[in-house]
Length: 392
Image 1 (cartoon, helix red, strand yellow):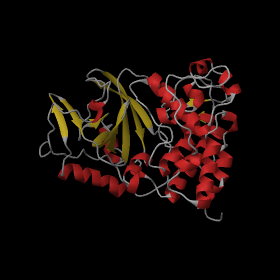
Image 2 (cartoon, rainbow, N blue to C red):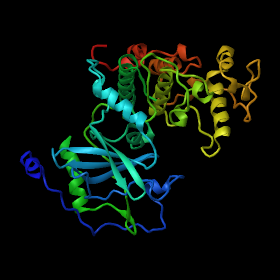
Image 3 (cartoon, one colour):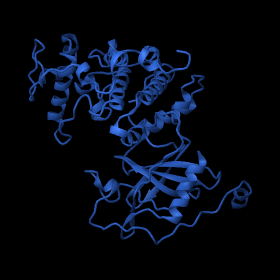
């Protein structure tokens, strides 16, 4: 077998220095250690230079999240760079894997297919405290949100914000209408390898456990991709769904109120995304992540502050709404309603017709009633998202 693989271009693993890097003090929490639920053994302790499954050599750490770490790796069989998403132990990721495999299986001519990051392979590796599911994914550049932090004032210029939003709308149109899914350049990649050999990144070493510091993957500009399908649902019959989804600030009111939800939750999140790309201050402020009930009341109160009270018909579909509104639709939550504010008064980066178009787009997305939110087709054709498009 090894002779056959070599004949097809298998390369030997590269050597990476084991000295010359900054050694972080053991008492300092770094990377995934800073997560409130972190436990030793929960995350796989990958090492720079390690070869996983006799095929993928770890080149650099790209990041970490609540359920995984991500690593740039060299495929020794194809000499391609890939990203390994290594999940924590004891957590089934069957839904995300099911969605990714389903999307990969579709034979669609929708031109937004290329905006979906598809899985290339998956396998399981054994760690010291259990098994870890690994996804093999194509490498992409820095995330839209991280790139935003590098912009002057922490916001995008309108052209770039529109570009990100319109491509997200396109990708969601494909997911919603063809896939029936609710989403809830090589030379620069090679530079990671050279950097790690010449200037090894800092790391924390505790016994046989190593925690590497992430590098930022800055590739040439390209269209944004939808990547995270951990909460996605396949809905071939467009059936209603239940359950808590999405990061807190992106949750639609029907999700906060434990109601059944559908594709319209993605439309709400597009509205929030559009706002956050252009405005330095979030639309609905998060009160305190450590007190979810108070934060939920604060979140809903801020929606009322800006959008006005929800329709009674909407509230009557949620028994949980009785915690926050009385039978007449008046607020009775544990936090007081803040002084009313208008969307117009909160926009700081646009003026004139551009501001009017932006506000019209936001209002269409941020409707209490899910069925009244702007569709992906209308969002794509909206004057705000289409203003920079060629021929428009």
